[in-house]
Amino acid sequence: MSEKTLFEKIIAGEIPSEVVYEDDLCFCFRDISPQAPVHLLLIPKKPIPRIAEATAEDLELLGHMMTKVGEISRAEGFAEEGFRTVINNGTHGGEAVPHLHLHILAGRQLQWPPG
Image 1 (tube, rainbow, N blue to C red):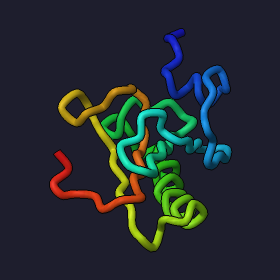
Image 2: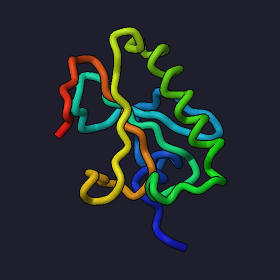
Image 3: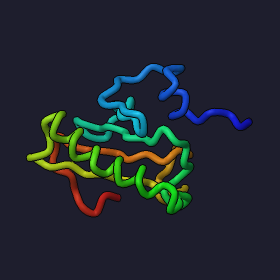
Image 4: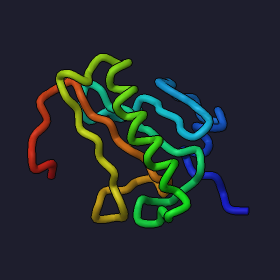
């Protein structure tokens, strides 16, 4: 059995986190190294290494996560001002943890292009 990823350890409660939202499919918490005043990470409980490795089997899960982004943004009070959702994939994409995760950034004017 392979070693758990950092995010699997967070989901299991082995590493503490500031939980924002949780259901049977996904888990959302505050990033410990925020890149904006609001920086949340939304992760699937199913360990998918990265978006490029998601399959047709993951369609319902991915759709569920995308709708949760809107719900979380409204619950946290930044939906109207706006926010950015980012998924990094691979080294050149800036992926740091090999477990699919959506960054939700808000609380300031974000620039484009992002980097």
